[in-house]
Image (cartoon, rainbow, N blue to C red; front, side):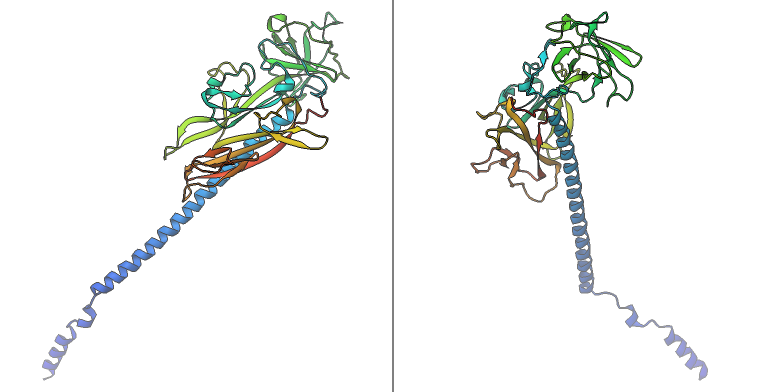
Length: 391
């Protein structure tokens, strides 16, 4: 009896409980899968939003950094435009001696603008020697030319003369001691240079350079100049105000880089062409920053005792001799399309309205691409400080 009960108990005790074998029903499984998909979709949406925000922040940072660099670079040169030593440009313009100089009148070309038209037509024309066909500038944008003596100046050791006798034909001997200037002396034959003091200046072409111990002797022979004689005798020595400096001529414009992004959009950049202009292979333009879609300029001309009128380079009031300040406007864009919608916004650069392509706004001075690249406008006004007196 006891044996049978134990056997029965053992048999029943080893039998599985059917309630423990029941799994998920199809409905429960579908609900679980749906909830899982909702959670995954939410995570993907959060990730995509974070990535879009990160891309936008990165693009904004790049745009702001590039714009700041471009504007600072141009602003520093605008402040130097027309510099020829301690003599104000409006007081007297320098004598031009160098063959093939990129200026016929420094008062006209020290700071000037051009509007880029079709077929490489720039109005007003760029400086002499600048070949517009060598530069793929974007039609409708503006170009800026700045000319001046470099702030890296070298003092004259000896009065210009021959055999110790002051004259206008003698070589120029300057002090090149390391640290005496903000840059090391690097003039060579064929370069343009400015020699000037508080009473006058000459822009000439260097015919020869002989480097010595902490000094350099620079020739200005008639073979490289319209005359081998300066317009005046320049005094040297400890108390002299005479300085020698490189002649700088820079042209800024917006050009096509020739590359595209993954969406096929053309990438444009701000370029600077420095001397010598003539050979784009040996001296190609420098790409300063990418992402500059448009550059616009207006020039402050004094029309009354107190007021400045800002005009375009094609305006009848535009006179480079009267320019006292320059407004620069840059329209910057991101490399890739990172916005959610097409950019239909309008932007103001240098006081000019730039609308989206296809806009019917009659006040628009230009247009930008209507795509999903992110854009920002930047503006600054810079004084031409080497024009302290009125001509």
